[in-house]
Amino acid sequence: MARADLSAMLSRLEESPNSPTTPSPQATPVRTRKSPAPETDSKASQGKKATKAAPQAPVVQSAGYLSFDRKETRLRPDQYAVLTEHARRLNRTKGTGGERITENTLIRVAIDLLLAHADQLQGINETELRNSVIL
Image 1 (cartoon, helix red, strand yellow):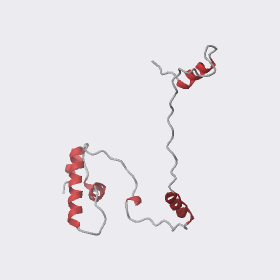
Image 2: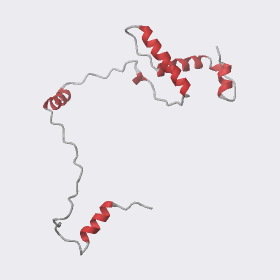
Image 3: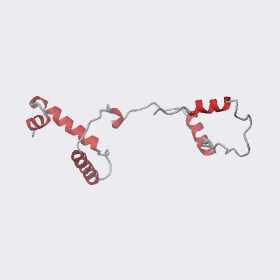
Image 4: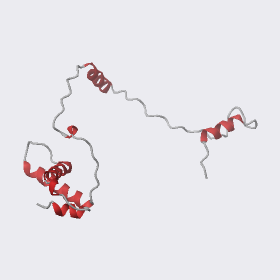
């Protein structure tokens, strides 16, 4: 069953000749949601104004994740779990400094290895492709 349009129903009620023009004292008041009050914190607004007034430095793109193109892939749960374990292990053992090693970092390394051996790829399915480049 289709849903009725509430605003259309309300406008029909207002136009009805039998409906009173003023609400009766027994009528239940209609509650409406109020939108959240705007932020009046003077420090927050001053910080925003200061940011806008300050000259912006030229954007220098680092070698971080922003320099990569986004590509989505589907992983099996076991693959993702092992990637997470290895990323955490590598981050614990690397000490301070260097970039953070993530699952995506390991995926990019694996892709580089695959592309380095792309001439060896043979097969008609994932298993055959994997077996053709086993190091």
